[in-house]
Length: 207
Ligand code: PRP
Image 1 (tube, protein in one colour):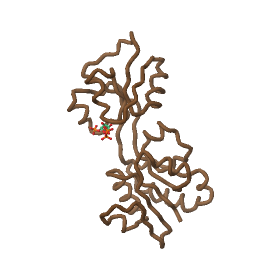
Image 2 (cartoon, helix red, strand yellow):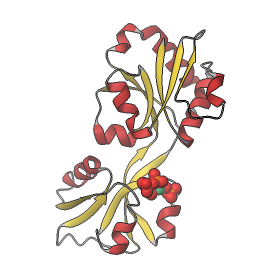
Image 3 (tube, rainbow, N blue to C red):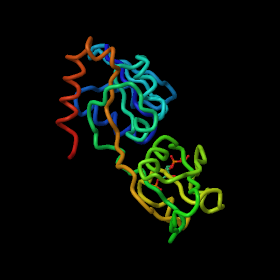
Image 4 (tube, helix red, strand yellow):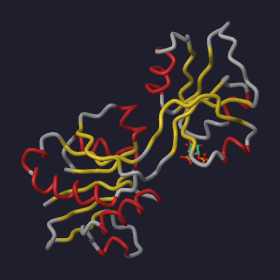
């Protein structure tokens, strides 16, 4: 049995579509309802819907053999998992953003609000830039508007949130997309099944 953690939500639907096209269907998953676990016994598959930021924990701890997690989560938490494939879905970028025209003169500590403290710390450490990190959990865009921070480090997908709040991208940190990840202990035991699935997905992934 292959246990697969899918990220709940819009990305998860696209990810499941891809798995289905690769031959790993579990039709019950399409039925409306609040169930979280779906099994296809004949294919030896079990899917679960997991909060996207929790997928890597399920996989690292072996509750799932495989999962799909955003590169943002992998970079932020550095879970002990194998990263097998870039699925080319959920493409966006991690960026520094601030009020339009904001210029960092470098004269004082830069106030940085973010959900991604490790990514932000590493980014500014590489530039030897002193920062005051302000951890937030959501609506990060408010911080520079209210003067809580100078800039934010956050995910930008369409750019709409920034635009509608008079903010702009000041620098790109790293491109992000969804990745297929595997539990390190399960991999040697289920190499054949995991490799087969990875190869089939690879054939469908748009470059
Ligand atoms: C994410 C991110 C931005 C927004 C970017 O927030 O933190 O706020 O999406 O998307 P856009 O460029 O297409 O506008 P999310 O919707 O996850 O909510 P959050 O405020 O709770 O982080």
